[in-house]
Length: 463
Image (cartoon, rainbow, N blue to C red; front, side, top):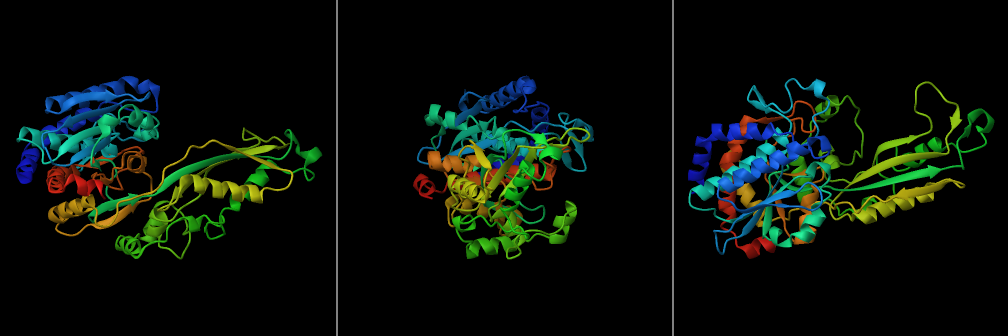
């Protein structure tokens, strides 16, 4: 049946493309209140399509921010229930002057569909929606379905916890398929097996009670900017290795399989550094692929203090500030990572200075889909069939919070099965989605749902 559904989807590919264009014309920017009408229109568009396609109980889940969209199809008794995740919000289009065509007017050039949200992630989300609708039209899905289409992914999912608390019955299932999260290569077939975690730390160093004249006090008082520079420099050695005591040891050792997977998708280091006009850096004991997907990091995202206006001001600043984020390797606890960095900074602070830390939240741990999980086996079967070769297992260097949150709060494992590619300028001007990816997705999603229909609910939950 999956082949018939795929054929039917491909037969109406032009219709689906036009529907995707209509979806992309709706400016659903979650971070900016000026786009409230675009967010509302996008919700209405998706809800109408789900209802039209036979999905039941289509409604909003309001956690106090941008509501999520849900809907169900429960016509496969005894079969697993799969949550299908996507998000309908997009990044702001700025800077507008760098777009070759308007960001909310979809334009096709050279087999690519250009628009904000095309790759991240309206293209892959609509593929999932249309697949389920086609199955329903053809007599029924091989699995039970619950949609969860979020409206705050691009702003860190601030209402997600409240939605889980308020609507637990709407999120009951055996596992989740995410349309978000794409492929790691434009040439090799890949399947995602995990992502790094993320946590943050913000702090201030203070050296005296007030800013003072650099001529009158310079050389006799500590400069807060100098102290901040010294502190952040103490986090790494000259080669970029993290030297915070206990931090690297908090990560589970890289397994032989993880090293093998990283080696199967090597980074061309010359191209990697040339693309960003930078020199090689980082712990040379590990490959670039391992450094950007497996190893933890500590990065200074911003630091400031003193006078930064036009011209000069001969001031000796009394305080400086920094924002850090930490990407977390497998098994690292976000709060423990924060504590290790905080303790290190306190230990390195000069006598007579004070450090204060701002509340940064708990963060998100790394996520790993274990070897042999039915979700992974099903996805690999589909990719072998559609691409005529086994996929390379790849980890994401970024963080997909919902995977770890749903595992912790709901006990659900997730396979990411999006069709975005790494070069599609997501979050940047001229974002695009390949038309070939639309076709591949419409062929692959029916196969994936069919494969998962062969798995028992207990096997998925027991993963």
